[in-house]
Image (cartoon, rainbow, N blue to C red; front, side, top):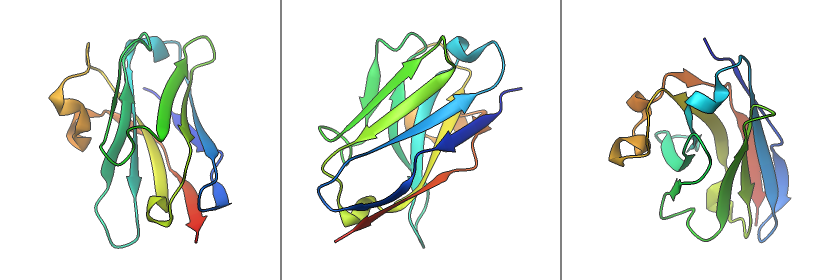
Length: 127
């Protein structure tokens, strides 16, 4: 069982930056591929980024590529999402999730691949 808690959301102006964090409970954090998803009002939850168990491989949605960076610290059981050049359309609740898979494959963008989810943190980007 893994318990995920996100933090770091808030209100930021367009063009600004924000870093959200997710801390996991338990001793097996390094055995999970970690991902970030987001859900805007009235829209489906969508994939943002994922990182391999070692942190050596990352994968991004087109909307995040070049602006967002996912990273992890296995010692501290934490995964981060650094978001730069934020746009109003990035406004959403951001969720971290843990997947019991070995590697990052095409399925990593799918919600059903993930076994555990956090409660989410709100990110609001004003224009």
